[in-house]
Length: 171
Ligand SMILES: Cc1cc2nc3c(=O)[nH]c(=O)nc-3n(C[C@H](O)[C@H](O)[C@H](O)COP(=O)(O)O)c2cc1C
Image (cartoon, rainbow, N blue to C red; front, side, top):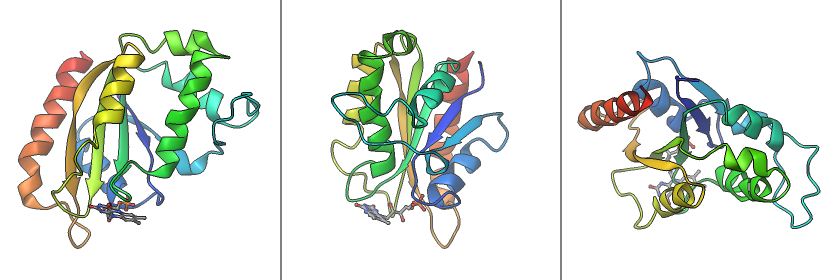
């Protein structure tokens, strides 16, 4: 599918990260998976959690050419719910290699939302390195924050730059 898929990993479905995502894509069609609405178990080495929602989400994810992970900054890192999703991608290298292989060539982007402009050093590394490992292309990231329930004006320029990079690469 041409329109981007946003995988939202915030602990609140209508929180700041969601607001940032909706501001970025306010004129653009996109689909969203809110991980809060699904039951995703921690990774286990015996891959025993085939009956939770992860594999059906992975099947949905591979239908898109552009996959955007959106996460708040929680304790200097991605949210636990998104990290759990990432850990489970290991299942796509073991019991569902077909799905893992299907990620090849897809674009990956990152949207992060913190309490200010300071993105912790190394925050983007798990995304960039995972994209490389999965033979995906890392298209870049945007970091922003919300003040009094609104996206600050100073973030608008970077939103426009990010939006263009996603849409151009999505063609
Ligand atoms: C558990 C927790 C940990 C947080 N840790 C950080 C942090 O390390 N750095 C930061 O800039 N903001 C931190 N924040 C603030 C959030 O990143 C910020 O409020 C963000 O906009 C929340 O997005 P959300 O509404 O989607 O959860 C933290 C918030 C929570 C709830």
